[in-house]
Amino acid sequence: MKRVYSFGSIVCLLILLLSGNAFADSILCASTTSTENSGLFGHILPIFEKDTGIEVKLVARGTGAALEMGRRGDADVVFVHAKEQELEAVADGFFVDRHDVMYNDFVIIGSPDDPASIKGLTSAVDAFKKIADYQTVFVSRGDQSGTHTKELAIWKRTAIDPAGQKWYLEVGQGMEKTQRIGNEKRAYVLTDRGTWLATKDQLEMEILMEGDPVLFNQYGIMAVNPEKHSHVKYEQAMTFIKWMISDTGQTAIDGFRDKLGNSLFIPNAK
Amino acid sequence: MAFILESFHSALILIVRLDAELLNIMLLSLKVSGSALISATIVGLPMAALLALTSMPLKGFFLNLMNTCMGLPPVVVGLFIYLMLSRSGPLGFMGLLYTSTAMITAQFVLALPIIVALCHSAIVSVDPVIRQAALTLGATRSQASLTVIAEARYGIISAIIAGFGRLMAEVGAILIVGGNIAGYTRVMTTTIALEADKGNFELALALGIILLGMALLINSLLLIFQRRAIVRK
Image 1 (spheres, chains in turn blue, brown):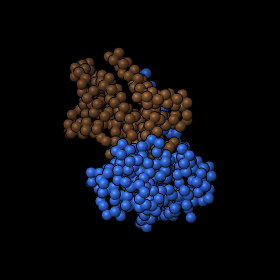
Image 2 (cartoon, chains in turn yellow, red):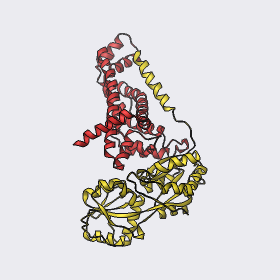
Image 3 (cartoon, chains in turn cyan, orange):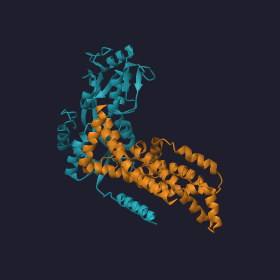
Image 4 (cartoon, rainbow over the protein chains, first blue to last red):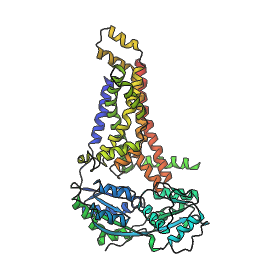
């Protein structure tokens, strides 16, 4: 009998633990790994929560997955970086009120000995062509993320189809891991400057190509269309969006520094 | 190999400091895996007994299914539960996605086949003489069955320990249905995955050591139960 009691007390304890979640005014934001892993959200969300009393729950995925979460109605607001896809999804009626928020840029990194000699080139398209010509290993995210989308757009302009080539590795992982694999393979990687700056001290790589306007990386925010999904918290989502593009929000983004003191994102809401 | 020592060191520091955030994460891990395990046992043990002690149609097929499902990839289970609970899915109206309830549901699905299959084999390996003796001594059929199940308790606890191990170590399913939301659905394994993603390998390993310590503690408790089970035999 004693055993039954102790089992029962464990069950009761678990039920108590289960009932813990207090109700709070909160929204769910689907965003990308770069915004969470860099620490940006850890910096700005507490400020927003203090200003408005709305709590933002963040689910960090690749841009493709974050957009899909929004389309399915599993998030209230989406904050990603693939402007063309975003505008397309708005046109399809899944999202409303899209705004530019901030930007940073993509860079091509690789081992310092630069086997395909892309250093000094001013066009990312030319750099990709050279990498393909020399058949040096290129590590791709391969996960429909914003970075992957950008990479594919550049490949498209080179008129080279890298898929299936033995020097082209699609790893299907986040930016950090992709960089790390590139580091081990002495390969080239297209990465965002934020992730690069946050982790470069762990990598034997350097920036070999930067500054091409094609490598511009715009982040945008938009609300899930309440006409598609009536349960979404559109009003709170709009409070968040308006705050992000307000002077207060833009100043908060501008003030963010990563753990090494780098400024990673430049606010540019209109 | 200095990194192992370093990680043990950081694990110790983390435990000594035990800030509210880490404590929350540890408790949530226990809550999710514990609730899933207990509900899987409550559902799975009677199923196992039914399979072991009665003759029913499709029994062999069902057992084979349960044994196969012990190897279900957590990502597949996570994806399935995600699609069920998604706002665009059949159960979307419940609003359960990205909550601990969704995580418990996914882990329940992962634990159930283990509990059923291993409890079943524990119950069938009980000496048939015991059942016959109980019946001869005037027990009803259901009383005799309970005697057999009680006799199998050693193996049943082993099944629970195996289920617990799978759940505490699991990350694929709960990451998909829980979303790893800080303060809400972030548990030990998803924190470890996140820190590893961020490149904080030492912290990730330190958290792994703490997770192992938690599992060790719980398993010790279960083993004490198990040992008592032998003594009473």
